[in-house]
Image (cartoon, rainbow, N blue to C red; front, side, top):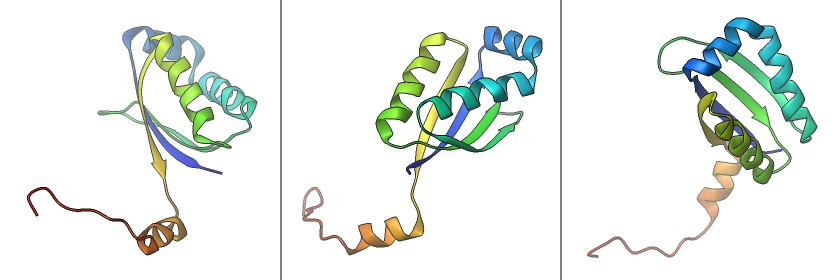
Length: 106
């Protein structure tokens, strides 16, 4: 299953919701969304600094991740970014593939 790192920052409205609902309430909401699309939450942490929340999630396919991303961003409660995570085996496979490439000016 594809794995993704999600980093998010709450907007002021989203922060108000977090204060009202608490961290466990948000975890339940995240679990419901992810499992509803056939995925799994591997880890969920709250932080302070540039990001307010960090998750590692598994989804059956990238389209499921995109669907969640679009829906969450449309809510206006969070600013998010998702990074696909690759295993060592996947990088080894990528390194074995031949790619025809010519650098600019070469």
